[in-house]
Amino acid sequence: MTSHTYAGHTLADIEAAAAQATPGPWIVNKTTKSPTVRSAAAANHYGKWVRVCTAKNPDGGLSDSPCDRSANNVDYIAVANPATVLAMAARIAELEHDAALNAAANRACRDLPNGWQVEITLERGAVTVALYKPWSQQVGFDSDNEALADKVSDAIETAIAESKQEGGVA
Image (tube, rainbow, N blue to C red; front, side):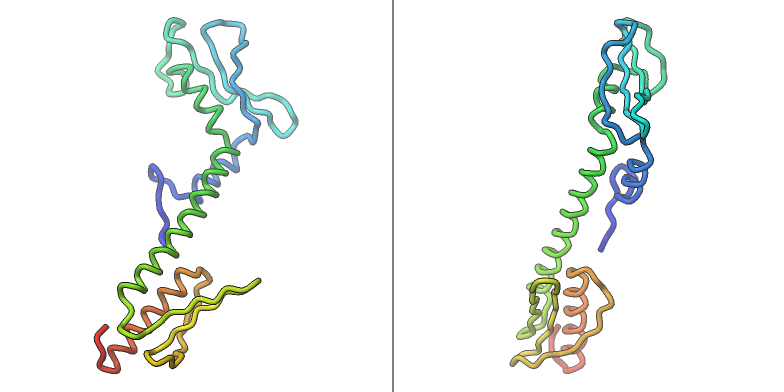
């Protein structure tokens, strides 16, 4: 399965960074001593609030630090906390898995030699992929892959190779 990147980072990179961050919950603290300062805080493992970012409003003297550009950064940081990022990463992984299976099914419909079939059988606790030549003769194929999409791709490659060996058109 291909590994996509998001702004130059893989899902594994993003998940690792989120897992190492202060877990939260994260909040926006608008009740600081200065009306021009807003900060984002996160509850650490000991239940203490830890400042994760401070922003000064433009009228209150902005610095050039990326974390101090605006109160909007603090609001964003509080929303994009580790729990949110990990939930998004899990959903992206799920969607990528579904997309890979869909792509494998489309490839089978497009690339399988005439008369060949890939059969997917699902039952509780198991999934199997079988390959059949024309006229229902089952063909064994090797696949060390665990991902269903990769098993389907292995079956397609076997069908194409065997069809060529037999003088068929792939």
